Image (cartoon, rainbow, N blue to C red; front, top):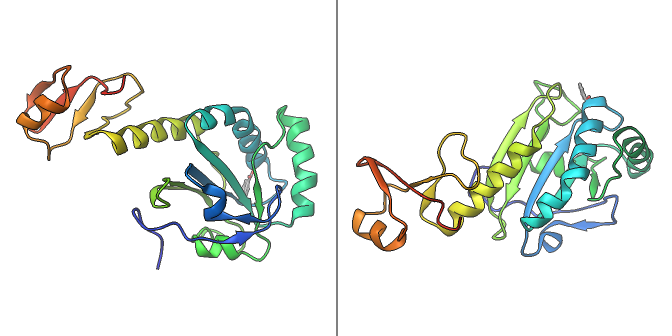
Length: 211
Ligand code: BEZ
């Protein structure tokens, strides 16, 4: 059975560049981004890992831990880390799982045999502090991901977990939000004291409640 949104993220223990990683215990009360890379010493992955290392303070600010995975051994990860620092100007500052036996890749369905039999696709799982899967993305090996978009999604996930709002197309922090349809106008009057606009009965916008 493949993992679906709302499922509990499977727990595991696997080697990583920061020692054995007991996933649920390591995650603690934080949000988590777990993402896979097809293979060590590949060019797109090298750029992705360097970019993420530079962006880590942004994830920290949001109480999000990041952890990568590649289906190679720890010794390869160590050599590759040196290349990442040399070519991207940033050293790995988060754990990279060494999933040589494919334990985690198989658990999370990160190998798509019709794309490639051995390498993982570029999977992303965002997991909440309740250990439930909140978002999944799957990119092919040939396309590097956009981590600014991940931060934007995390901002939306964290906001919508706390308030009865949804975020519209291309929403960015600070912009108006949508009041979820299950909220009546009477409840909206109470919940959104800064007011709201009724564009259609099902489309009501309000300033970001914690903005
Ligand atoms: C890469 O990460 O650069 C890559 C990996 C597998 C296939 C194509 C590109």
